[in-house]
Length: 179
Image (cartoon, rainbow, N blue to C red; front, side, top):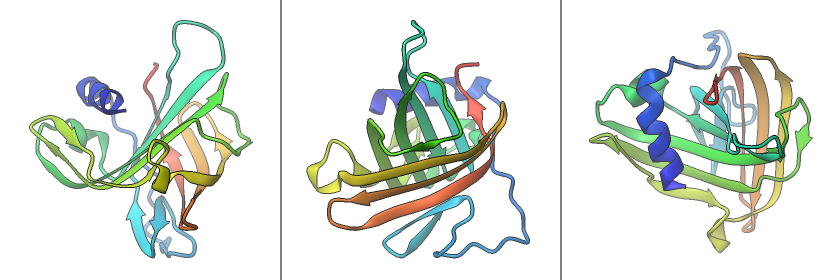
């Protein structure tokens, strides 16, 4: 996973920005987060969404990676040090991303309080991780409500094996890293 994040950080300078369609009239709440997710009673904003097909060499169904960040692409690629970085990654297995309900993610990692320092991403505190037994999800639901070539509306919920739920949504522009 570290290689994926590092690869993304290296290609960022050539990419344009993608951020949510913020509406200052919408009030975020823990019960109904807007372009955010909730974990353990805390609200975490997400501003940027990247989508990429992890298998570009064949037409076989593969992992479609989805990354959320609480920083903009410009901030991440600026070369400046960043604190309090939130990074979410999960992979859906499909031939193409569709407006459907997914009940499984092959990989998932959620980190809070990370940093970008000297061009390197430091993960921070893991709150959900498929590779750590105590942080694995027993229930996953990802719903893509709408999807166009540039915009997406997505809801997600991951229930950890200790019963804690991470849930949220994003509605806005996304960056397709395969284009």
